[in-house]
Length: 336
Image (cartoon, helix red, strand yellow):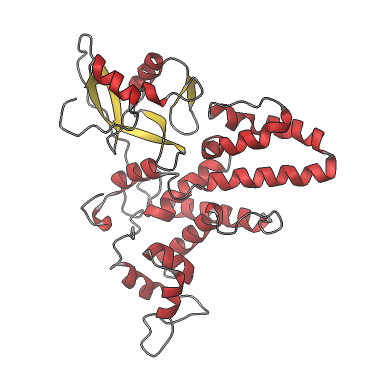
């Protein structure tokens, strides 16, 4: 875990952390899969299961294929989509905006290299509004979708961070999430003679909330107005005879043969992923990318995208060990 205070971590490092951690805690794209499945079930009641299954199989096949899966028959599209739900953010039109909104909601940054604060402000406001409107239009209760799932949580966090950033009061549930405590504790802090927070229509004034959050170790303050977000440039290295270089992510794990999924290696940045069958070909593609991106399972077993931040040179024996232990971590000892 980083020894620095969260407030001391700049936007570039936060962006790397976000990409490394995405899917561990918050992935609204997975809720989109639930919504699509529920919508298909609803349409089946109107039109008929056979007709809807044929259409839905066509609709979701892109996500399923990006995940390295396939739909054996139209009636199996639900199971195939559920298996591929961690890929929804990179294939569907709403997935990418929700993915980027999570960087703002959780880490207080905008995944944009612009330094124009007004432009970034407009971008955040548009993304928050789009997410809020979509959530309002989605019948979560009627379709038995958990109101505590990732999409409602993302909208709550993004909306309330935007409120804080603009000096407006915030919901107790959101403040609890930001501060890493229970909602009950926040409500207790709003009551009694020695209460910490006052109430504005059941919400907490922004100044009081921010003063309290400043002392919470798990809170990421908003830095998007001052951010200078740039893509890291790779160091130029002369070619070494018979050397094999593999990219290493921020947490020390590397791209290796053990990351094959359904006979293929998913590589590339979100929105431009490809499936490559051969490891050496996949590695060559990664080496040509300005920043290498690949998928690997996180602690929860979801295949999320990670970015390479450095390279290591391996010999044959190390590559074999990496095949057997895909989550092996390389120390940053300057070996590359």
